[in-house]
Image (cartoon, rainbow, N blue to C red; front, top):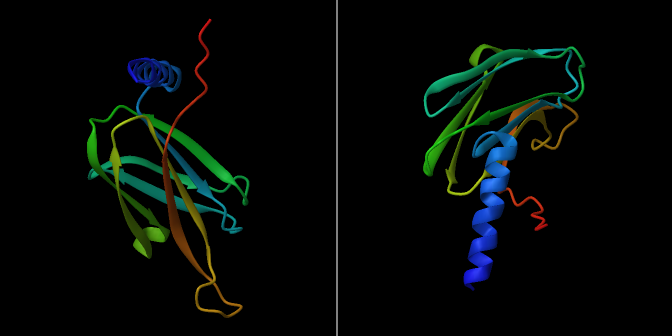
Amino acid sequence: MILFLLILIGQQLYSYIGIGGNLDIYVCNVSEIDSVNITLYLDDEKVIHENFGDNPYLSCKNLTFKVSPGKHKLVAIARDGTIRDEYNFYSTLITRVTIELSKDYSNNSNDYNLGFQFFSEWVYKRFVLQ
């Protein structure tokens, strides 16, 4: 058990140094629209306001932050506030959050609305002892 904990701690330190922080945010426009401005707030502080759309499909940005362990809030805004969503998550280990602006077919018609989807996971990279 102690060996497992030492490996886990070593892996987290290795990953922290490798990505430059303990929170990795991946923002993508997968909505097939030409371009869209996306503003992202982390704990009420603006961290990005950029146009996603030189490539109209799969325009992405990767952001890395050093945050304290605990509860955090992401707010994503697009199209001047007409599309807005919040996401709460806990960061204890190295955490990756993926934010996608994509189609929402939930109304069962051919029309679609745009919406944000959030995914989060703890990052466990391979740790090789040499």
